[in-house]
Amino acid sequence: MFNEITRKYDIVNKLVEAIDDKETTELSKFLGARIACPDSYIVMLGETSSGKTTLLNGLLGGNYLFTSVRPSTGAIVELAFTADEVTQPYYAINKNATMERLTREEFIHLSKQPDNNLSRLRLEAKSPLHGLGNLRLFDTPGYGSIIEKHEELLASFLPESNVVLYVVSYKVGIQQDDFNFLNYASELITKDTEFVLIINRTPDEVNKDDRRIAEITGYVSDILHYLPKVFLVPNIYCEGNEYPLPQCKELWDYVQNSVASEKHIKQLEMSFNGFVFGLLEKCESIIDKKILMDQLSQEDKKAFEIMFEEIKQTNQEIKELLIEPAFCDLISIMPSKFSKAKVNIKNIIDEKINKSDKMREVEVMTYVNSHMLQFETKKQVKEISSYIEAKLDDLDRQISDKLNKEYTKIEQTIELHFSVAVANMAKDIFKKAGGRALEESLLGYFKQFAGRGGTGIANASKHLLKKFGDLFGKTFSRQTHNKLASTLSKIGATSAKAVGFAVAAIIEAGFIIYDILTWQGKLMKSVATGVEKWYEEVVSITLNDLSELKEENIRLLDEETNGWIAALDTKGSDENADNTEELKILLNGVKKELGEYKYE
Ligand SMILES: Nc1nc2c(ncn2[C@@H]2O[C@H](COP(=O)(O)OP(=O)(O)OP(=O)(O)O)[C@@H](O)[C@H]2O)c(=O)[nH]1
Ligand SMILES: [Mg+2]
Image (cartoon, rainbow, N blue to C red; front, side, top):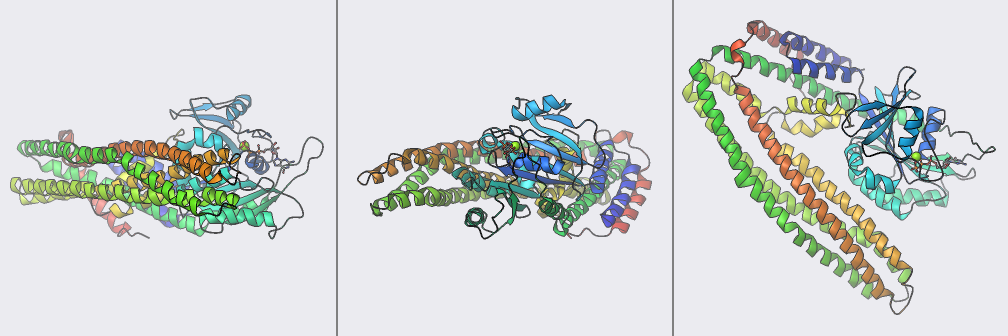
């Protein structure tokens, strides 16, 4: 499939074999396997009993998964499709990343009632679908359970999914829960994800002009801001106690094609290309270091040690004088920022209620529930997000300044201390240490997806795309930004979820407000309760995320400075192998054959 990439990979892999470094060899093997067979992810979402699991049983051609009229799927279940017949299909993947074989009974039991160790279940089956490489399909529980128990897993895999299959039952339609959940999910999926709306169990006589269909499609398009692909799956009537499983050939054909689409292939190609060059870069740095070490005297090595101490000192200063205080300030100001936001939202909605016609209570209530709360909280969250972003941009700049100064100082020390030839080589190695992005992205990819029990799910492309900006520059600021972007979108998503609570509070109160004289006051009161719930939820999540973001900043800083030190670390250099010259020649040959790194 990826002929050109495979050719390049083979060239670099020869170099990897010659270098014979354990970690690099492992990375290379992993990358080779992924290029030969990349992963694609399809995720099923929808309210309980909308028929998700039944559709999957239809695809599998048998009742492999448990279904019921009551909430049935309690765990996230992964269908891993293989090329061959499977003899042992049932597995549990635990939170500690171990994988356990299960009997069918154990599997069914855990799918209804997952225990605390379980991350997800895995069913292996001979593939009824063909697409690009390994297809992995995820069945999820209905909203209540998924938000309560699996939110973290959902937040990690939704942004990475290639296709989302969103199942709505024709009879039930879009309810408030769907509305809240879709708002939440739409914040998490990216523009590369193909969103498919499945309207399930539609009566025979219904077609796309049907009012119900238009209503469901309309709601979903409003939330997504575009019209997704829609499939109608006919209701199947019972024959005795049993009814035949749904086939949905057209749907599955569509899914197959979209997974194997040109767009998706292009994305993968781009990322694999980046990884191959990342691998080359890693090889190059190993060889460069060998060359340098061969030329250093004991005294030179001591001079390096002194430099390392300085780098550690700067690292410490950045943590204590920049990162700590910046996050401390942010964290302490958040409650009051959100508190002001709360008052603003309440005032705007109250004014609307006050000004409204006393006779139009139902209309006003619906408007407040389904529009105003979402809109006003989103607006406020956006403002606070911008505030956080500006503060962290500032912090980023300060850290980059300080790191740059340190960087320049080290270069000067190197120049003063060593002969021109050694200095140039050392500087070169050092510069590369500052731009280790590619190598790191490959490592990150490996860490996340290697090993059978790896819990992360994603496709390769997005991982590399995230790091594209870093290739030739400093890594620090861009990486913090990525993390920041995901934190901010999570605050947005959480807010959407919290608004759901607010709306629920209002609906609960809704039964008692049909009274011309008092409904406005009562509605305002329940808006207050709802907004209060939103406030509590969103503050606690934001504070939590900011603490995590601080840790992430510290981790990245350590990674960066440790990378500098590792680049010139002389430990173990005395027992250097003597094939350095050979490797140098091989490397030059590989670079020539591969040509320049290009984005596309
Ligand atoms: N008669 C009939 N029943 C169906 C059809 N599709 C699904 N069902 C039944 O509807 C119920 C719910 O289906 P499930 O597939 O378990 O729904 P789900 O979306 O997976 O539900 P959760 O796992 O709880 O989220 C089951 O009892 C199915 O047998 C259909 O086309 N016709
Ligand atoms: Mg189910």
